[in-house]
Amino acid sequence: MGRTQWIAVAAASLLLLLTYWGCPVRPPEAGAELQRAPTATTGLESLIRSVRDDLAPAQIATLANLEERLELAESSDTEPQRPLLEQLAGEWFRAEQPAISGIYARKIAEASGEADDWSIAATTFSLCLQRDNVDDKTRQFCAAQAEAAYQAAISLDPDDVDARINLAVSYTDSPPQDNPMKGILMLRDLEKQYPGNARVYITLAQLAIRTNQLDRAAQRLEKAVELEPENPDAVCPLARVYEQLNQEAEAASMIERCQQLINAAG
Image (cartoon, rainbow, N blue to C red; front, side):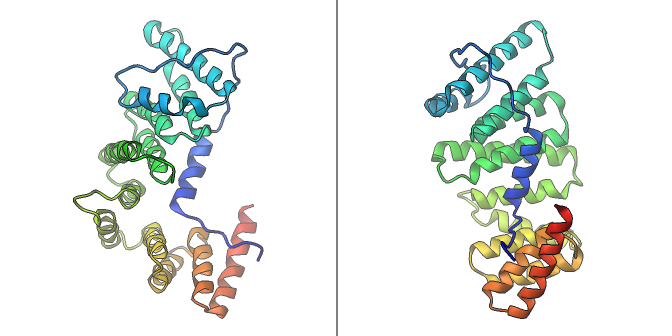
């Protein structure tokens, strides 16, 4: 096998957001100064100031144009606001600024009141927590925003297990100071509540892998494969864990299954 696939929560979230924010916006012909967003949006101005020097001129021009159109739409209803907010979220996401992208995604969710929109906003903020170059202030902001957005999504759709799992993962990415085990404990509770949900076991396995608890990771992934034999998110990581545990026969079998699933999907 050329490469064992690791299908993690972050990768799945990134694929979702790349799909959602995936349509580039044509930059305006004339460059313009990037306009500040409304002051009511917590943290947006300071975040934009902190990253503006890292943006390419075309990005600055595009964002300025979108902000001008959004400001006009807000004041005079000249065009629908949601498409503009989606484009702004997408542009900031492609600029590798999930904290800023998340703010616009949150605005979409606030306007729509839909659980799916809150989940997308929360996932965007969660990706901010998974970046290595995020300062403490921004990390705290993203953690608080992710938590609030996931809670909103859960309140609107209490049966959405994925939102509960993602909230728990956000706590593991940025553990609360007063309860550093909160994310792990939430996932263990979810395991009891939803014993037939493969993603709970996959997520617990990913956390075990982080701490090199490979035997425990294998047990979790084996359970996930038992529940969903055709799920590459379970099969492919289990192949890698078996390799690391030097279980050659099991690894070879799982690698073959992983490759078949990848080929079938591609």
